[in-house]
Image (cartoon, rainbow, N blue to C red; front, side):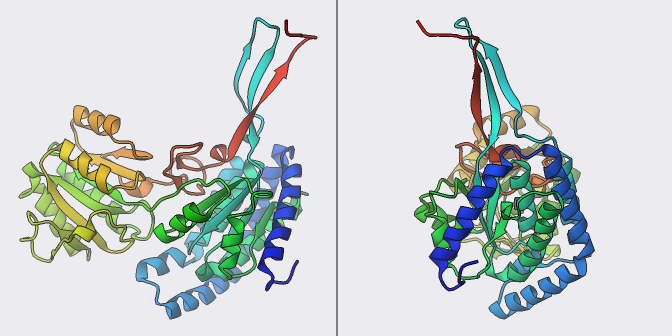
Length: 421
């Protein structure tokens, strides 16, 4: 490995090695990839004490940096969360291999038989912040899709990510696959990120996973194609036909289960007809749960709320805060979401089928939900085993990016001596 002080040379070497590994992975047997992921899962569980010890170093570093409680929660690993990592690796291992899947097949009058077949992207660069489990998720999904991957985790998760990465490499070795298939940038130096964004000769796509600052940097500076993953400015609209019991359960879960994830609710929109009844009850329940409710003028008389400012609309708190506003109608709610949302995840709570259909048809977020907590907005809960991010753009991949979304396709054309007139 090159000198860690020479970032361009270091990254160039990682890129060269990843490109060579990708050439082998493109035709690696599905069984070998499954073995690698299963062995990696075994290694993570066997080394859980070492992973937790590494995480304790990261937690101390993060506390010294003054990270918020929600950010510390994103970073923290304990045995149940490590079990979740293990379960994710096994779930991806058990999935059908997407590489080689025939997406379409047809015959032409000119004598050609044509197939459109899934193929790996090549080399994926993943840049993420404080969640160390992304190391396992991204490594597993890229491998399943036949891609080599270069992982650049956040400085806060440096030790945790390193310990998890070592387990992934152990799995590759056990399956006889190239160790360079899953590489990790071995430095906290931010220059490595800038270098990755220009490695057009060795990286085929960049996936940024983090806050608005990181994603904005990547989108501004990248010369490599990017899967956009904007912040989760998640709205819940409580329609006039909402069921009170469902609404109470869903809103509290969507905001308070884990405030630091991108599916956490950040803005509550309440139909005017419910402002003094269910809407007020929801706001009071949030306040009692410890949430700082930034309320508009129609809700500010509720004890414990704080007055909302213009900055509260379109804000990703990732903490025990939520904006709350009374809207005149479903169309008013949708106008607000179009103006302030991030096209990530938005939900409607209603028993009115027509209202739900209108919400689904007229909004264009990557994920739209009805009567369900927005905390479900990830690939694990969608049955993808894990996800590398929630893509909010419209090119190539959108919504949870699982193994299938980390592939492209090629055309296989067969003739029997066919010639063109």
